[in-house]
Length: 195
Ligand SMILES: Cc1cc2nc3c(=O)[nH]c(=O)nc-3n(C[C@H](O)[C@H](O)[C@H](O)COP(=O)(O)O)c2cc1C
Image (cartoon, rainbow, N blue to C red; front, side, top):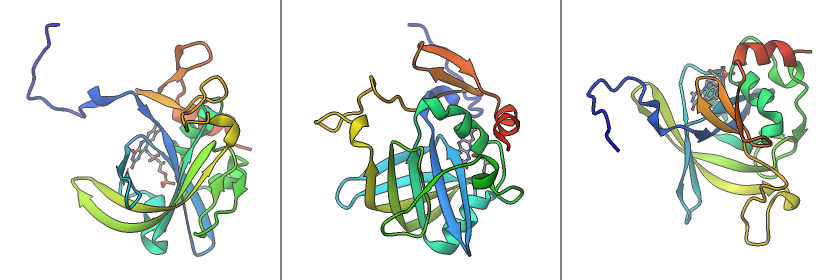
């Protein structure tokens, strides 16, 4: 396959599509959640998970203050919520009440886990490092939540039951029910889900 080679790097979106997850945070009695496409598992032992968050985001401030965060895996049936959480600012709205987000209690941290998540990690912040314009926040995974119905016996996600939210970039998500890409403009989703 002939490829174009360029040193005009731009936003180097060629690594998409990505699974979008929701990072939840809480401090001083204020809960918040935001969507991120940039995240990775880092180590199995100890269990470490990294999320890349701009230090300008309200969620970052909550995580830095509390030293903890949640990582929530949301089914594609709730992709509008994922888009809305990425199109609204916790400094301006209470996203949990605006979007009627259900909270489940975490076991080891004081950050809400989203009821809509088919799986979630409770993380204790172990490193907070600036790389360019984003922070790499490394969390030790200290509790795992998962819906047993969503996973097969070998731990693999059963995509006949649940599909993850896959983001192609440019506000386009994969509709796994029909295997068709669909556009979910983040500002539109903020308005359509707003109470
Ligand atoms: C699909 C999608 C993926 C995103 N990925 C990231 C990301 O990886 N890191 C990041 O800092 N912001 C990301 N954002 C932007 C934030 O979610 C957005 O700026 C949000 O408003 C921040 O919320 P907060 O200010 O309440 O913390 C993404 C947004 C969308 C819609």
